[in-house]
Image (tube, helix red, strand yellow):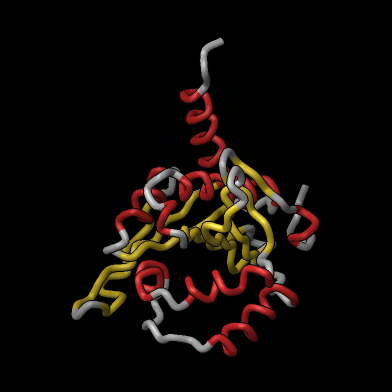
Length: 203
């Protein structure tokens, strides 16, 4: 089933192991605002120089994301499904239904959930949505040279490095590379069939 034209409310929640995806929710705006104005999260995830945003400006932008989302973009909240706690965000951007490709990202905003596998489970769910619900053929992701945790996650999910934009980002008094990765639908099928077989429990 191709969910490209269906609103997120019609296809969510999505779940995988401990994580659950929902659409963005206005009731969680203060958590999103806090993450939006977190300098460390900005450094890890955004190439835009950090600049603190007022709540009024953010509220206007967030309301549009919730109520009038772009048809070529999907934004999800990531929840700990066991504790029913908002822990991060995931997105699919620049969805091109003709060429069947898009760009993805995952951010675990709650530091209490760092290093515990929630990013990997979220990435697995996001890829499943891309390849099995949006019928994409190609998904791409970018990493900054210093964000080794995201790079390791992307590579661990089966992505292939396609190139490096050298000295792309100026931050912390020096230039850093931006590394570009992609995963194709046949590679996704092969990687996760192999992974699922390896992780299967004996009867």
